[in-house]
Length: 232
Image (cartoon, rainbow, N blue to C red):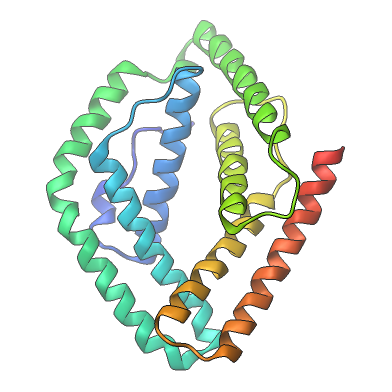
């Protein structure tokens, strides 16, 4: 079982696409681990880690913009590179001052919430937590309104599904959402944010339409899966 409290702070210093992706993935897993551990109470949080996560997310989004534009509109790569440079500066500004504070919080959490699967008794309690957490999450998804959805509602849906998927990384859950559904919603979200950025930098309508069509395609595919699973 991977170590929940190893979030890759040292590797984050490189600010490479891989290090940013892995850092955010590990923080998401840690947050879900803490949520499972503390359920039904709220999990602990740390402002410095939250800020690092947000700014790393902005840089991650800029990298994704570059990936899409390499095939959709290479002429906008220069603007995308400038955005990446800006987001790196913003992240570096908080990275060094935050690392000690984040490390301190991580050490405290590691003491308070030790890995439960080291004993048979702890593992049984952990699995019970997983079942209770799954039931709670299922009810939240059942209460989710039917389509049509705004972009923010789609984002909320994707967040709920992703948390459920990540909980399955730590515990043997009795049920899980359709594989790939959260990924489709994530790609649709990325394309939505790419549209917003392209409008900001003055991209032509034809490019915006192309990106919107791709977004709608991903969204439609995701909603078909969501409605099929929801009605089953």
